[in-house]
Length: 148
Image (cartoon, rainbow, N blue to C red; front, side, top):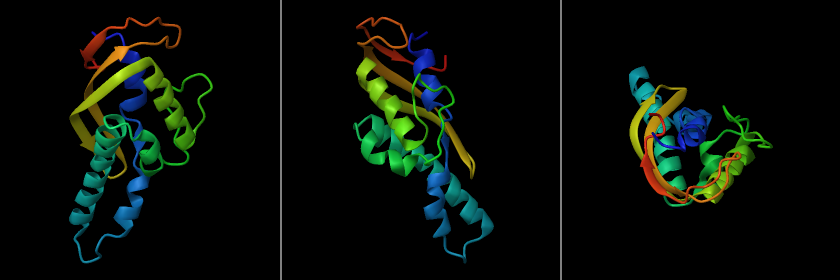
């Protein structure tokens, strides 16, 4: 079991209501069948997760991508003390996380989506270097599945 279990899972798992893929969905060719449009929406939603994890977290581009991934009215399921709502709230969490867990790297293991929501499972590796929610750092590098 990983000591960061509750810290990461609360933020990342199931956090995205896929409102921001609407632009791509609205541009769908009207000659496509309803099933083609549904499949496109689902793939767009999965691609938001891939973008946020692979580019945002793993390549440290969260700030650049937050407005593309999160809706303006996004609310964290388990907010940090003092965390605002919306895109600013998402970035608040990212900044706090990066202060505490250095060199983090995420690997997506599962993605499940429909036309409105997407959830995913991942493994994360990082070094716990700062105090977070009163928990002292271990300064140990770990690989873990936060959902276990």
